[in-house]
Amino acid sequence: NEIMRSPGSLLILFGLLFICSTQKAPGHKLIRPVSFQGICGVVLQKKGNHMPGPGKTSSQETPIEREVLIFSLLNMNQVKMGDNGFIDSVGNIKPIKTVKSDKYGKFCVSLPVGHYSVVVREPKGLYANLSDAHNNLFPVNVRKNTRAEVKVEITHQAVF
Image (cartoon, rainbow, N blue to C red; front, side, top):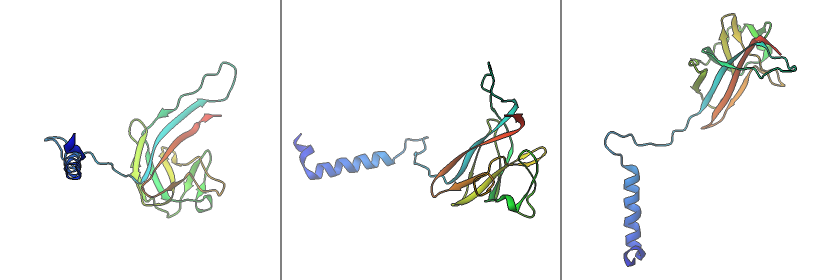
C-alpha cells in the first residue's frame, strides 16, 4: 500500500501498463484503430409488385453483385437521362473509381474528401435512381476520416 502512494511507483506502474499495452504476443497482430475515409454501402435489387394493399407482405430486397462507379458529383444537366433511372450517356466524363459489390451486395471504396455520385452498371446500362433538390445524381458527401454509408436500390424491375 505504501509503495503505491509514492510518485515514483506510480510512474513505473504507468510505464509498465504502457509497455504491456503496446506489446504483442507472438503470432498476434497489434490491434490499432484504423480510420477510413470514403464510401461503403450495399447494392440491393427489388423486383415485382411493391404496391400497398390488403394482405400485402413487405417485400424483400436482394443483395446483388454489381459494378459500382464513383464519379465526381454529376448533375442531370451533364448527362443524358433515359427511362426508369437509366443514364443513356455521361459524355466523356470518366469515373474516379470503380469497384464491384460482393455476393452480399457490399462494397467499400476509399476516396478523398469531396462530393460524389454513385452509379451502378446494370446489364441495360448505367443506373442511378436518386437525385437531390439540385438535380445531382445519387449525391454522397465524403468528409475527413469518415465513412459515408449508402444503400443503392435497383428498382427498375419493380412497381411501387
